[in-house]
Image (cartoon, rainbow, N blue to C red; front, side):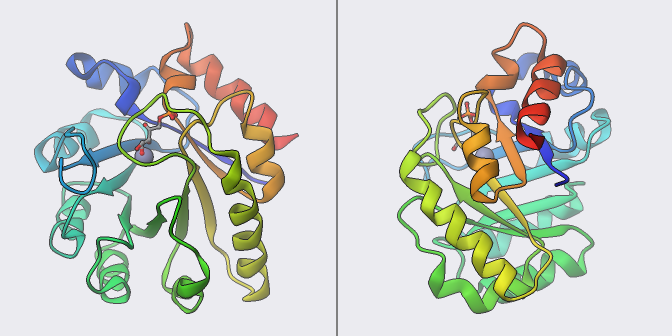
Length: 217
Ligand code: DX5
Ligand code: ZN
């Protein structure tokens, strides 16, 4: 199975973002967490930083928007240079229209589900998406413990995708590390976000290689 490893720069040194982006050679996408202090109780970065990072990084950007009103903001992240934009379904007013707009602007459209949000009500939306993100922690902070209780949801979602005959990436985000990535892969995830497990490691590029090897087992 082809897998993607997406280091999250939330766990990087924000004063050296360009350097940190280049420190994860071999990564497929660079995961950029946008938080607005409303949808989640934390504040990170916005459009201007994404614009600069898109120019500085060798890796395409995967922007995870943990913000209110993604209908208004998500298209601006595509224009800023993001190759993939994820909005939270809990915050979107019109998820189908938004996914279509992101795709029409040339980026990969992705929708995220918080731990308590079930996938089943959104089954019919899946063909509108390139990727579905299942949060394996409550969004807002890096370094939290992986929620094992999300494994059945990952499994059910992979089954749903198969039943519909869709080509959809299934991303997991939160607490993904050497000790949890195999369980996620086994449940059907194929895109793995890892913040502290990559940037907390002495050699981030080596951590990416090790995570990939484990996910591909
Ligand atoms: C949390 C963010 C994650 C975070 C993951 O809300 O969406 O992307 O950076 O960090 P780790 O891998 O440390 O749990
Ligand atoms: Zn994230």
